[in-house]
Length: 221
Image (cartoon, rainbow, N blue to C red; front, side, top):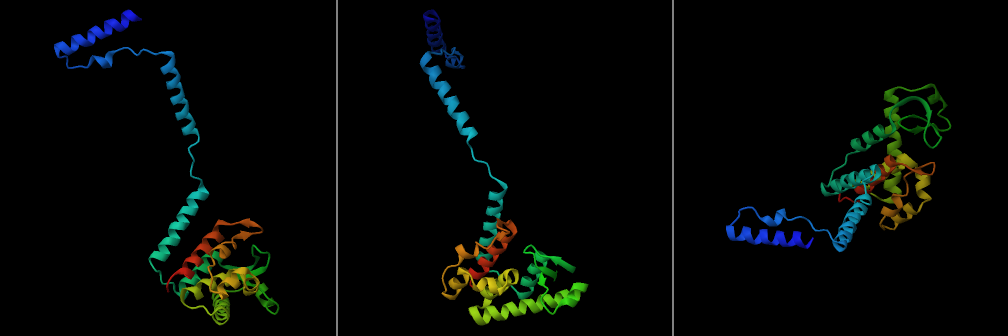
């Protein structure tokens, strides 16, 4: 070993004197001692640990990021929401059903999520698309009138909670802490984002709808 190191040093000095263009230092054999071998093993082990524990982006995290970007975009652009756009959102969410069906809450419904009430038994025989539109706009008007007169909201706030009441109903809202927050003109984010469950389980579609309503509510329009 000593002979090998001595020979390598002589070669290095010779290359310096002769002006060699290729650094001989790169050609020196690696002398591995017990100490630097231990350090090398430790570094490689640390790299493996870091690689294994690197967090991966889940589908839910990706959804939440996209949803947050959408909400921020709505606020930043000061989007003007029309009543037609609110109605179209309800239509996309509910989808048209010309025959009676059970909604996720278990209630007999028809059209665009219209609950078949007492005295509306004739609807059990089915309806036309025009009748579904009529039921939708009548239900929206009833919700809008209540939100306007009871909560005294206007602009995008009025649209947000007309949309909310169409989904959950006026009675449920009136019994909630969310209702108290609105009446007291206090922040509602932590309360409205609780309304995202179907049969006790969080639903990503409901979360997206609540986030959009919150964006409308917090906008300046």
